[in-house]
Image (cartoon, rainbow, N blue to C red; front, top):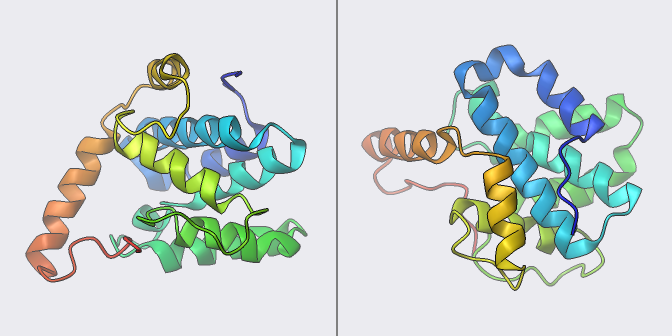
Length: 179
């Protein structure tokens, strides 16, 4: 398994969001690269998979910063949809928006097994768990990917955002979670 350190589509999208991401840029960039690499390890490294996963990774949490909200799935999907229309790739909208919508799904995604939703979901869970969950990826690959793209405060930022959300929405602290 190869660790990808460059993904032109991902890099281009994230670079256009450097200012809004501010001090969180490196943390989010590294999170996206970890998710990209884990996803590709599950599904293979076709050009189409690289493109779709790059787009989904770039946008999947971006609504946090774009809309200043922790209830970010809809804003993230909207940003992605606009990008896909602008780049004449709207035929991928349903799949990539589902990848974004269900990246925190607790149970396995089964509806469209040919889609990249399940590899993307597992990849995000590997990262959120700090590599404790591996879903049968080799421990060395997970550890090397985590080391290549340091956390840079990403999970600390998510904990802070969760605590802020609990104060204002105590009965809906994690609106992005799906069964």
